[in-house]
Image (cartoon, rainbow, N blue to C red; front, top):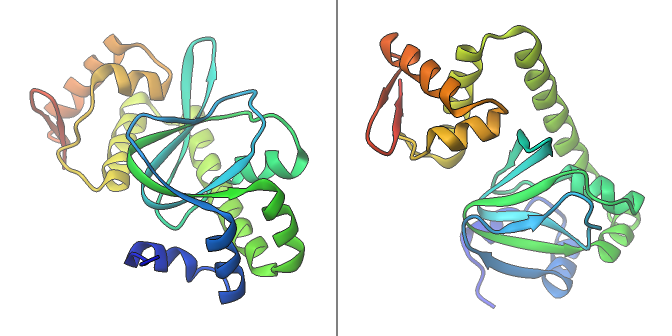
Length: 208
């Protein structure tokens, strides 16, 4: 099978012997945008490793979402990894944010690889440190930042993640990911626009 440059970049994260086993045992799939990969309460059978695209990971309570993090190319899902090792149901939802190419690592193989190939542990420990730092930032925003600061940082981070500016997104989607009401988001976006931090177009938001 001919490897894409993006696939080579992912496989370069581990030693060649493990890369060979991944190619033999894992599935490489193309997944359309807005496809649910994992939902809360589901037992994890595969762990995603993103080659191209973007996966949104979030939790949900009382009908509201809380965005936890995005899984970008060359990254995996530490919460899926933890649930798989503990054989516990998932505590998160995972949905493709855009058309994505993903390596699906079988859980039973990953468990064996953690003992056989120490570098896969290093890969996930790095992911853990990154997600822990992001979680602290989220908690800090929730406790200490006003909504306009949270919203502006959210827009910048999302624009960086999808590599698009203007960012095509609805007020309703922003409200869902920040756990607030659409009317509140509309009001705060207007405030940011008056401060010349953003410009709203018909179906998108430009971030400055």
